[in-house]
Length: 229
Ligand code: CA
Image 1 (cartoon, rainbow, N blue to C red):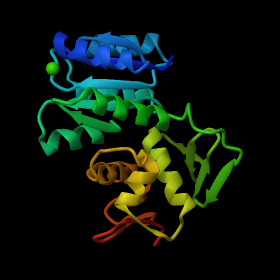
Image 2 (cartoon, rainbow, N blue to C red; image 1 turned 90 degrees about the vertical axis):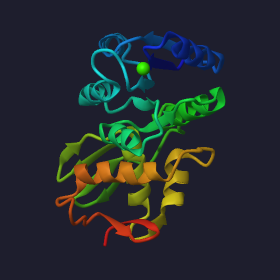
Image 3 (tube, rainbow, N blue to C red; image 1 turned 90 degrees about the horizontal axis):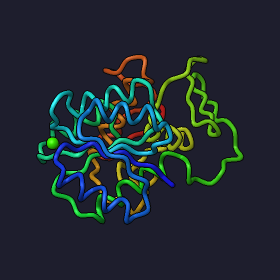
Image 4 (tube, rainbow, N blue to C red; image 1 turned 135 degrees about the vertical axis):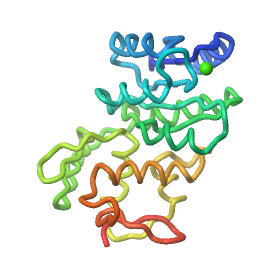
């Protein structure tokens, strides 16, 4: 069964999330603080998605996210934001989260987001028979879902990997933000276009020689992005 970690200090909200994810067929593990969540993830390396509340006693959700990402780029991470402030969303995504859900959310919205990330995290995609996409200095291995630049492995989250793949499969083509959202997050996804921009900002930090003047992922003003100049 697909395993999901829920970190939320408020018992009533945690209970609501857990019951709905179990109903949707997930094996749910629960934590009420950040330290406990990190320990549970060490004991359950097969967890596919982590839902992280931000405001917590002890270390906050951003810090938990940062610590998870320090050792695990594969797991999907969704931040639970209490406020609809843009800053929270952007901070969460820049610390390595893949998505965020703003409270209050419906059970349908929550499970749709988790389902989308589980699909992204690779386990349910058809087996790829193609091996590598080589565009020096980059080499994308579609079997292991890894990226190398000049022979050096670059650690990517699953979403970042998916974005790289979309770009490398469409060199020189201007892609709208909507197209990227559809291809990476899926057509049934009902998030915001902003997450495309934030993920690309984070990806640029990892792959560009000069983030101020990107040479690989270039901006197509008022439209979207393009791989190459
Ligand atoms: Ca809280």
